Image (cartoon, rainbow, N blue to C red; front, top):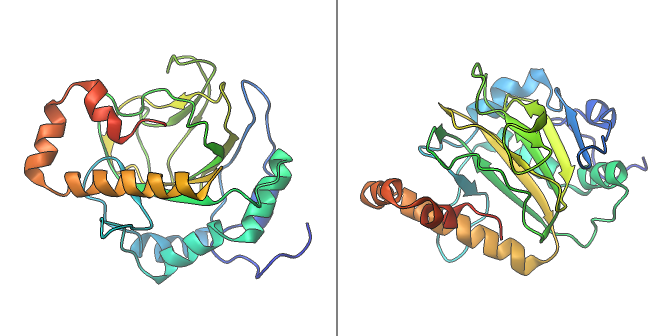
Amino acid sequence: MADVGASFKYLDEAAIEKLTIKTEPYEWGYVPDALPQEVKDEVLSDAPVIPTRGSYPIKSYFGLPRLKYGQHFGKLIEELLSERFRKIVEKKFNVDLSKCPPCIVMMGNTTGHYNEGYAHNDSRHKIVTVLVGLSAEWPFEKGRLRVLRSSNREDYVFEFPPEYGAMLMFKVSEKSWHGFLPQKGQRMSLQLCYCDSESYVRSEYLRHGFSALIKSSPSLNRVLDVLPKNVWSFFSRKR
């Protein structure tokens, strides 16, 4: 690959380059060691503290909540959003993402709530999705993201542990079903999506920011817990 920008410190480029894309049941690839172990303590000590379930935005619009984090975690975000990393993803999927703005959010906890991890194939506005595990450990059988053949969460070909350094990427399509079985725990991961427009990226940051605002209020959060599934899932569904 042609040299594009500075070399990585918080991503292991050699390990990511070895990732092989599989084509069944859709285009996806996995690498267990995409982040160097020698920066693990620095990255995790600088990671945001996420008190509750759901995805939280890296960027903020109209004063809505956003994640706060330290320098080392910020450098990891910069490398994931870099042209150099985008070029690697483009090469893996043989796709041009130069006009596809990125959107990045973070999950920090799961509660075992009934609708967490529901099977979905991602919004039609997303072109490629990259997931990076950041949990110090994940000792549970449930809560591992599954590459699915269908909308049935038991119909899977692979499980992605949300542990530090693990990376899963896939090309979004009608077949790109994925989900996980509910499990309470500190399930930390980053989700980077290359999208088809800036307007969609802004709408995603606004949606996640509004959701974060509601979840920051204990009384409103309790209301969400008792809402029917189809109402609660407004804040996490694909669009």
